[in-house]
Picture 1: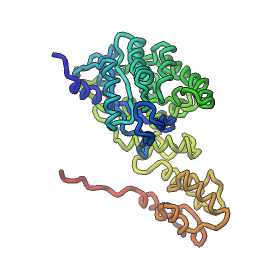
Picture 2: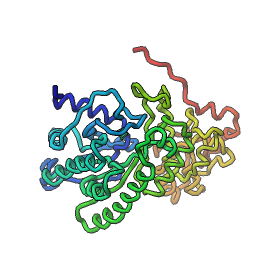
Picture 3: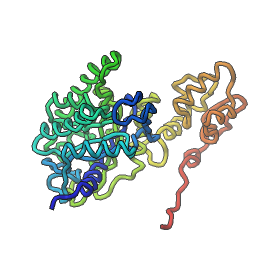
Picture 4: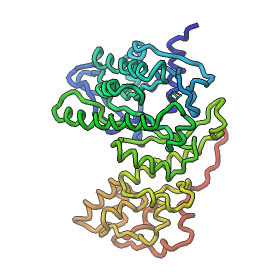
Length: 408
Ligand code: SF4
């Protein structure tokens, strides 16, 4: 018996939950000011919201289908998996998106898919969804399309015309792991597809934006699965750095591997601790916005893993105590950025404020900095940390307190 739309929605939204690369940060906001287009609220425009970690909220996140001809060992939708299957038509996805959008349930669509028939066939179906939303319905919401790497370059380029963001999943941090766990996937083909998309974005998005014409996707992202293979955190960060450098990615997303039913014996039986994913995001941030090198971030531990107990910036500071205390009234920006507890905005505020006054701890409190957290690492007007930085128990001071589990 054919599944109802609601049943298929349940299957295909659940199947999409494994993909983390759905954030829209940095994308140009479409709007319906002037009462134009779907999403118009009489000139009020559309408000997009982002979670603090950059993940977009309120997207309809679904697969076109969870049928797949591939057999990637780590994927619940692989051809050999014993899961319920479902498929939407192009029109159904368009209607669902419009209906949810008009009811203000969502702000956009994140569409991915298993590979059916061929990469081109699947990509064409996904492009038809985006094309119909944009051209037939003047849809002004956000669209993120997952690209099928083996689809033709022309289809990928057309996807970029309608989508705000596109992504191609690298999936595993090491090409050797991909060859073993997803033998039908081609690491070289994935890189080529990302390279082509980078060129499209550079050639078309920026000139279009300057000319005020219809835009091209403003960026691409990817996802790395953490804990499905033996890659260490250092390997993962090195891969991310190469991806950012080579393809100008907006983001690399880290998704902790989820054990799946009837999985291959080559995969771990338990998922890695979620905090590992969190530490990788923190380390990724340090590389991109705080001037840290990968070696510095991973130097504290010989096994190439990040410390799960401490955030990587604090771990670096504790290993490099000779650099502290940092005088907040004299230090260079690069060194201020290395103080645990100082974010980029705080450092900018410190640099601006100290042009006309010497900063004390009270001034940091006014900047909403946790004085308790930073005082061991800084000097300020009227404040010099006593021998705190030499204390042997400094690490213990910053370790998170054990938390008792709640009774349910
Ligand atoms: S191609 Fe994608 S959907 Fe298909 S098995 Fe591989 S990861 Fe899963």
